[in-house]
Every structure is written in C-alpha cells, then in structure tokens.
Amino acid sequence: MIVVGSTNPAKVNPVRDVMTRLFADLEVRGAQLPSGVPEQPIGFQETLQGARNRAQAAVLQPGAVWGVGLEGGVEFDDKSRGWLFGMVAVAHAGRVTYSRSASLELPPRVTLRVRAGEELGPVMNELSGVQDNNRKTGAIGFLTGGLLERADVWRQTLALALAPHLSPELYG
Ligand SMILES: O=P(O)(O)OP(=O)(O)OP(=O)(O)OC[C@H]1O[C@@H](n2cnc3c(O)ncnc32)[C@H](O)[C@@H]1O
Image (cartoon, rainbow, N blue to C red; front, top):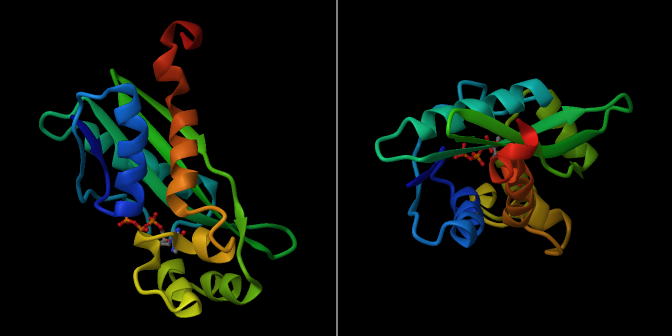
C-alpha cells in the first residue's frame, strides 16, 4: 500500500495518478497525519520538514510500503514578493527523497496577509469566491485561469522526487 500523509483530494488524487502508473497493483490511501510544522509553513526549511514528517509518518502506517508527504509553503523574496510552492517527500526502503515544485507569485494583497500571519487557504477562498479551494484546483487553478491546477504541479513534483527510488544504483 502507498500512504499519502493527507486526506486532501488535491494531494491524494495526483499521487494515485502517478503511483498507479508505476505500480498498478498497489492501493493508494490518504491518512490524516501531523506535519509537525505550522498550518502555514513559511520558507523552504519549514515546508521541507512538513513534507518529510508526513512521508515518514505515512510509511509507518500498517501495510504501507511507500509514504508520500506533500506540503504547501510560502516564501518571501528580497522584493517582498510572496511565492507559493510545494515540497514532496517520498519514504521507501529506508530512504527519503525530495523535490521542490515550481513557484507561483501571489498577488501582493495575498502576500501581505500571509506575511501578517494568516493562512493562505482562507485568504484564497475569499479572493476566489471558492470554498475549500485548497482541496480543488487551488490558488494555481484560480491564478493561472485554469492553465494549471494544484494537482498538476503535485504530479510533476512527485515524479521528480521519485527519481532516486527508480534508479537506486545511480544514486548510491
Ligand atoms: O489537509 P492538508 O494536507 O494539510 O492540505 P492543505 O492544503 O490544508 O495544506 P498545506 O499544508 O499543503 O498548505 C498550507 C496552507 O497553504 C494553503 N494552500 C497551499 N496551496 C494552496 C493552493 O493552491 N490554494 C489554496 N490554498 C493553498 C493551504 O490551504 C494551507 O492553508
């Protein structure tokens, strides 16, 4: 079984899409597990830690052979812009591998509120007029006019994070 450290369909579905292409016979299941970081991770390290904690807790679930952790984070640059990105961690066979997603610049009014301590999810729900947007197409779907969705970015990032597991002989 493959366990995802979240029950959010915008995370579990892309993991199922990718993993069933590799392992058609393995079940993919979401589990609500602690990220061990604040609800709104800020910066690379905190976001990475959240993904790692979720993956490590997921692979310890009964029956799990793979554990996948996905964590959304925001970081601020030296021009005070805010960037939404995600980290994926994959725990399997005693190793944890990672990748970082592409980034999306947030609108300044959103960045200001996240910088002041608000969680991105509710701020984006308000802006988009869509409830639970983080469980649907996400900020990515709304701000790209549907060109990309949150799940698309997770699929790509998970594929990249899997590389060392797919060729362990190349990574040592
Ligand atoms: O149930 P979990 O797995 O925690 O899923 P989540 O979407 O709530 O949580 P994340 O930890 O991945 O994201 C941290 C915060 O950023 C928000 N967020 C991240 N990506 C988003 C997106 O594309 N659209 C809207 N909100 C997003 C999310 O709602 C949280 O408030």
